[in-house]
Length: 190
Image (cartoon, rainbow, N blue to C red; front, side, top):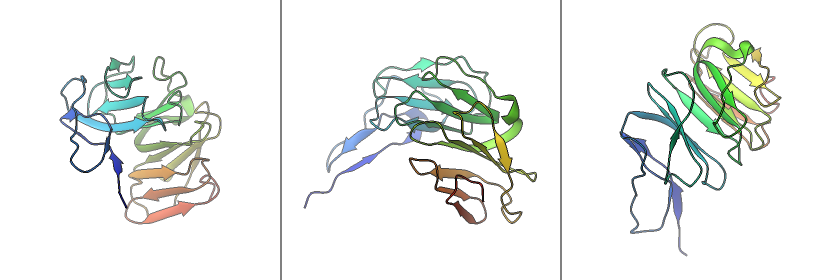
């Protein structure tokens, strides 16, 4: 039985996602060499979004062959995520930024501004978006309308900093990690 693996990696330069079978190698992209911090992908791997540790967000519509810098403030980006088709993007920094057109335009919803966002996730459709934050009583934000409005939910106080989040394709099942792992089966309501 032949086993294959598809993986993506970032460090100091951005590398395209390559379908790996034994013996294949990684191929560098034309993205600038910088301190890349986070990367997201559409389901087919054609649309990519990547954020510098401190700087810009870049998008690619051809599996990483070419990259375009997006019109967002230069800031410390912590996390990016993409819908399955790559049209809906979400980015975490000091607040949450959302793009509904593959990164051409970005908005920062008022209801999710000014908090230190550590991690974001998107459902396959982009309708459900999630943000995990550090400190304070409200450590988890949910949008059920593609990032237009956000509602805060409190994760138990034992979770000091919600540093990573993952969601199922339909946005109903979640996992959030900090000093413990918390799960939700109702889109983060409980």
